[in-house]
Length: 283
Image 1 (tube, rainbow, N blue to C red):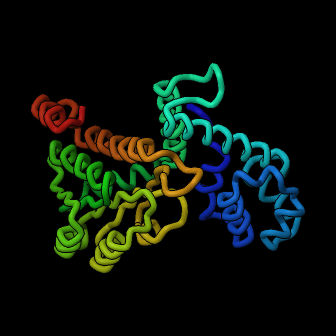
Image 2 (cartoon, helix red, strand yellow):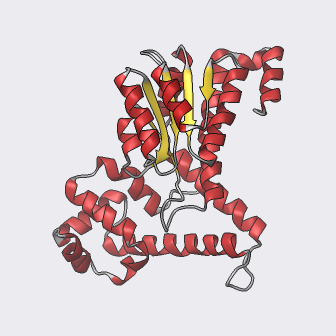
C-alpha cells in the first residue's frame, strides 16, 4: 500500500487539531502550490500564529520541521498535477512518462490506499453494526453518488437487508420521514455540502435515526450531522482527485462494508445467497 500523501494526512487530522493548527491546515490546503515559496516566519505571519506554532504543526504531522513538510507538500502537488494533466489531456508533458492507462491505474491505487488509511476498522465495524441491526436502511446521494448508493442498495438487498435508494430529492425526504429510531440512513456525498442532503440528514437525526456519512475528510455539514463518519476523496477542490477516482473511492468503501456484512451474516456459505450476490452485481 502506498503511504498517504501529506495533504491527505493534514485533511484527515484536521478535526483533531487545535484552533491555531486548523488555521495552518486550512491555509496549507488552500495554498498548497504556493507553500514552497514560504518560510516558516512568512506562513506564521499570514495565518496569525507564532513561528514556533508552524514548527510544532509540522512535527505533529510527522515531519522534522517546516522545511521537510514544505518539501512533502510540493511533492504531493507536483505528483497530483502530473496525474490530473494526463487524465484530462490524455498525454504527458514529460517525455517517457507512462501511458494514460498506467497513470489512471496508479492514481486509483494511490487514492484507494489513502481511503483505506482514512477509514479505520473500528469505524467500519460501527457502520456495519448500524446497518446490520437496522429495521430499515435508506441510502441517498446526488448525481453519480446516487448511482453508487443504489448499487450498494442492490447488494444489500441480495443478502436480505431491507433498504431503499432513490435519487429524487422529494422521494428522499419522503422516505426519511418514515424512518424511526433503530433505522439507518447512509449518505454518500463527495463534498458533504449539498443543501438537500443536509436537510435529509437533519430529518433523520431529529427522528433518532443512525446517520452514516461517506464524504470528503474536510469539515462539512453532512459529516457534522452524522453519527458514524466514513471518508472518501473528493473532486471538489483544485488539489483533489478527478471525478472518476472519487467514484472509485466511494465504491470501494461501500464494497468493504458489503463484504464485512456478508461475513457477519455468514452469507458466503449459502449457495442461494451467493447466487443473489452475483445477480446483484456484487461479484
